[in-house]
Amino acid sequence: MKTATIKQTVEFPGVTPQEVYDSFLSSKGHSDMTGGAAAEISDKVGASFTAWDGYITGKNLELVSGKKIVQAWRTTEFPDDAEDSVLKIELSVTKDLKGTVLKMTHSKIPAGQEAQYGPGWHESYWEPMKEYFSKA
Image: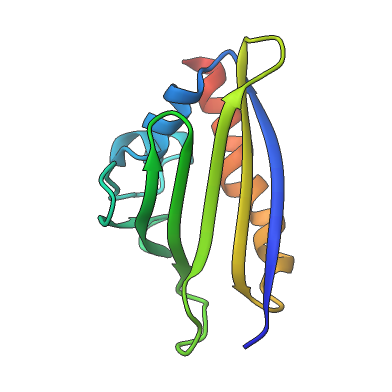
């Protein structure tokens, strides 16, 4: 099966990489920062997770506190025979030291689905996260 990769970089002013990391890997934090969609997630390697009311499922593959999250990741729209995609999030401090740079690489997406997931990351994650962290 052909696959595609999405790469995006986004900045979150006024929040540390550790705060972004902790929110992403907390059920309540993940739900709150994405606008209330239910998530069950943990900060343990090997733990399974769900997000967006079960639309997304996966497993934590590699975690480096405050720096990196690597997950096996799929949605309910993946073909049954598609392997899990790989979501890699790298966190660092902005040049002005007042925020977080998030670099996301989402690979092994079933070809054709990247057209919806590219904008979906902005609509479902980055924009709600910017709003959430601006109020923190």
